Image 1 (cartoon, helix red, strand yellow):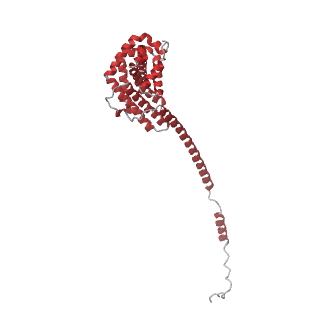
Image 2 (cartoon, helix red, strand yellow):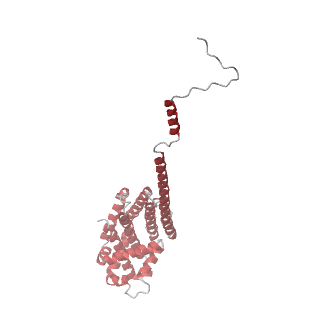
Length: 312
């Protein structure tokens, strides 16, 4: 057979052979398929939109909670600034030989109150580590001061002097504390002023005098009995000392429980506050008079007894 004829130059190309029916259908199906969205794409887009909405909602809630924490912190910082608390990092920095004067005890008690306030602020903002450090520091400060009180001969002499004063004025103490004895200045106001002279900010002086008054009226007889027997007073102080010194490292427990924090706060401050009342008023005869000094002894004794009651 001869070779097929070639078209002459310049002529139109011959038309290609038509595709088979199957090939045509396959091409149309492929073309149609290219215009469709893959299954599940719409659902994925919907899920992403929902996640974005949740993220926005969580960010709003987070901002709201932070704003609440800021308000709590600002309020507490304003309160602390108003009472002008010291910035001493630790009582250990003070000379061990410093006398146990009312001003020394006033600074110590203020520092402990400062630690406890810092603990509450740290709890409010969710910083448990800082709260734990503040709580332990308060216990260590209390331990240091109570150790000195329990070993101090001058303080024992103060208790012996107070014992005599209470015995001599016992029949007048109740009326003096209640304000029915006709004194010129209310007993409570004089007590607050004396604690302020000892170095306590006014807000803390009011707090500790009112706590001591409440403890006294709960059991007046027990308060007088403790003050009339210095051995009982010292026994109670030693119990508070032992708890403060031996359990300081365990105080991190119960941080999340407000009731537990309040209990330890009272245990660490009531005893020292009562002791400060006794010492400050033992040198305040000119201001209080003999009956006032005896009444102050009963008041301080009541605060120490209240602190010991939190041990049970």
